Length: 224
Ligand SMILES: [Zn+2]
Image 1 (tube, rainbow, N blue to C red):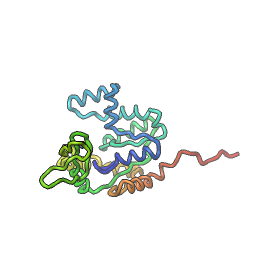
Image 2: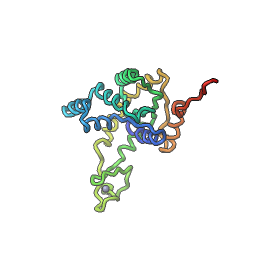
Image 3: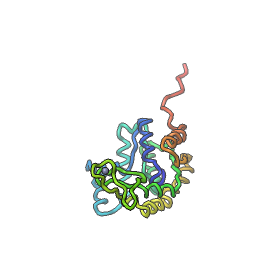
Image 4: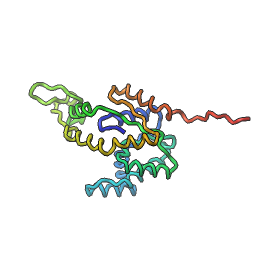
């Protein structure tokens, strides 16, 4: 868990490469279930089409189906779920039901002012969709894409506007951050300072997981 812009998606990808276990991102899962037209996908689509939030039961059902796939047998990284206490409790119940359990919950701590500065400084190219962090521009002109032939002006995506970022951080602080106490009480919480270059954060993350991410080999040879 971590605030929007804390880098948890990027770091999850690095764990995928290192440990060969899948990253289960609920946003991607939902889109995938909708695209494949599974039962849960159809119900999720109906909710989204009518402008409603997809209820937890559907999200959990989709996660449960995903965990049953072969590549998740050795482990998985859950990214973007749970986001509030009710979801955390429902997740725990579901995992108990299928005989799985969380080994660790990593909290990415970041400075909110840094996140606001970084995200609201992003611009993207309307043609190639490349994202530029704090692009330079000529005085009096918007920054331009140096990758496209006609150098279109870069624009700010609505998601990256400062007011939007502030609102998402408030929701995170109010709904999701309190889960730290929930998981600390369960003995699962590992907190890392994620205000650092990507490589450094990866090292801290691996360190925080060292107690749970050991290869699954048995140390006890049968006694003869
Ligand atoms: Zn471009």
